[in-house]
Image 1 (spheres, rainbow, N blue to C red):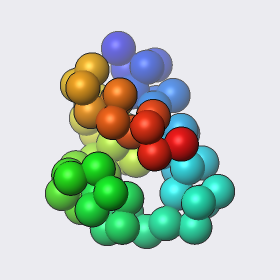
Image 2 (image 1 turned 90 degrees about the horizontal axis):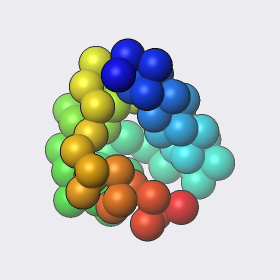
Image 3 (image 1 turned 120 degrees about the vertical axis):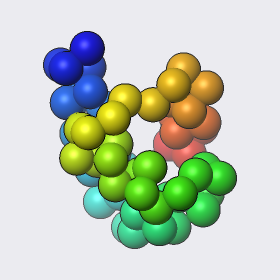
Length: 59
């Protein structure tokens, strides 16, 4: 799971950069908190299946 968390963190960083979004704006788009996005980006937590699905919908 650690590797999956790291891969997801890289994906979050890439999406933020490509879309020019801040963590706060991405959080708003997903209905999540800034702290949640920050933990995802820093590989501190891994999102649930539903949250991953919502994240991919932003792409």
